[in-house]
Image 1 (spheres, rainbow, N blue to C red):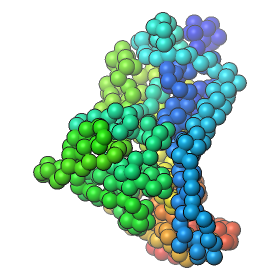
Image 2 (image 1 turned 120 degrees about the vertical axis):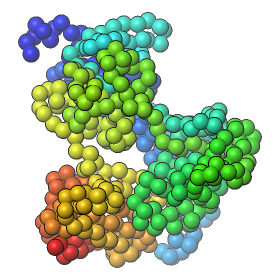
Image 3 (image 1 turned 60 degrees about the vertical axis):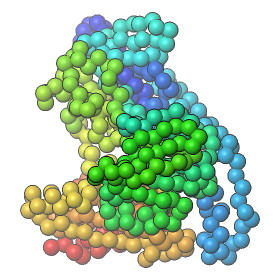
Image 4 (image 1 turned 90 degrees about the vertical axis):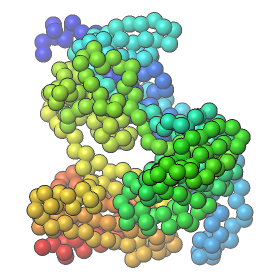
Length: 482
């Protein structure tokens, strides 16, 4: 593109939204010489930094220590006798808050150092290659850009019938500030958000009732992993988990009233009175105020349709110069997916053709112990095997056979590996156990390279480490090749 035509635009690229997806896109673009602006109306860093992964990990780290110190039986196994554990709720909350401030500051400075312009206000499209930004004071400015990336993210989903007040009935947005510890809290939803907060609350002495509308608790996890994980993460704790029941209405107050009905029949089950309710029923895209109709884009339940190069689509065809990344695309609603999508979008804008590979993106739940996965689920792998005419291989590797896990007295765990029995290609893995979130990366790398267990089985792992759980699975898989 000639300098003359580039100069007709205020910016080469405007990114709407400064969460992980927008941040990575803007930084990557600015680092590669594009005149870049990023628009944000809320806190820099979006959900992950301010209301999601970052503060929740701080709470999980602190409450995990409390759980460890309070587990007299576990410590006795090492010959350790600890005094009764005491903690200060406010200082745990402060730790999370300080971490958020630090990371938000670092992220903002990184963008400024890279040369990106930060525009504070609410961004929306004004037709092709034009973005309007409404500042807090109501002043509105319209900027032109050669390319625009939409990275507006998602908000917690509150089902109909549930009324929130931010104090007695709240979402993860409020839960991360840990303003108080309810004696009895109901958590609606048993996905990763519900599980992580159940971990925090039970460690800090709260009783939890978990309400899951689907017919099994932890429905988004591999069924075998969910079964073994639930023994410790749910049954082994002060958690009453109920599946197949729906919270038809939730009314804030003291106490909070929850009207439970059978999911299948909608017949009343009972009315619970609890101290607080955390609504952890998933997330919805933030796309309503983007003025997408000005470029003819129709969303799918609010999600912006994109191809694997991150180009926004209308009737399956790309809209010129318009891209979308992160939760608003509804692909894998994870911070690192958003960041990866941001990098892919900018590479394509720069003329380096690149597609995203969702299969190799890992996911983790930071309970104690952790759960992680990458690639295909067993059901998806079986489907693919049937469609492509190969035999699916499946092996299990147990933490109880691992020296390091035994040394830590943390031998509760399982890894399940899915592979193609003809080619040996790794199709996916699901892990529950100590440091599962770190262990999954090795398999994610193998999936990204479409590697075979034939070569992976001969790779040497450090002894004694948890990584040998992966080595054992690779060796078993290589031995089971057709």
